[in-house]
Length: 219
Ligand SMILES: *[C@@H]1O[C@H](CO)[C@@H](O)[C@H](O)[C@H]1NC(C)=O
Ligand SMILES: *[C@@H]1O[C@H](CO)[C@@H](O)[C@H](O)[C@H]1NC(C)=O
Image (tube, rainbow, N blue to C red; front, side, top):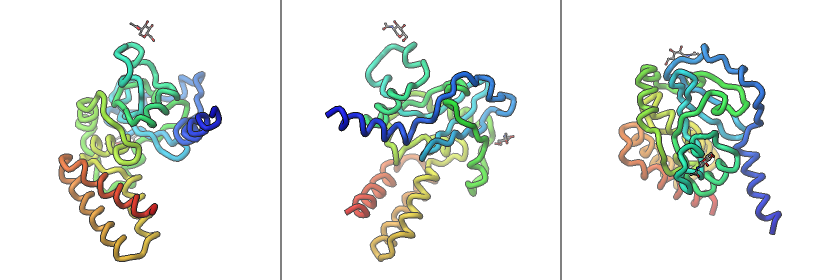
């Protein structure tokens, strides 16, 4: 019984939790970051993203159970611990919140503006990026694959809500499957991406298509 409960926790730990190195508060040189910069923290399999707002403040989307189960604002404002994060992943609750650079990075290295090289679209003006990030602060529901922290920064920085990881997932899967069916579904997936680029309204279309696609892939 104990093992059955421990195992998914440890697995999730492996996926999401970077090593914490609390002593090195000074390891982040704040003068390197400008308002609207995209900060990226590589974790084991996923990358965590945030938008720098200035004055040692980073807006980021992070899974967190606490806002769903507590009204204690001062407790919620404290750094998201591993258990809060993992329970947030399991229950799919997250919030867009502001933390210090140190709390955001959780001991890892920070890359700045790394995604700019991968994205065909130039970033919006830094101040506009930060304003978008600030406007979205608060609780949201979080689905690990379909609406992750990357959607959030993509929307803020480039004005679109498509995750590069999700897009890569799509093209990688397309490479694996060589049938009419997959070509058809991939085209639909592409159409979903186009809709995403255009507006935020059809937020449900791409997830729905991708879930159908994934179920079909797995069966
Ligand atoms: C990040 O990108 C912005 C443009 O949006 C640029 O002004 C800034 O200098 C870049 N920061 C770094 C550290 O490269
Ligand atoms: C809220 O959380 C803080 C910090 O965890 C704690 O000190 C305080 O007692 C809590 N307040 C209530 C009303 O539970």
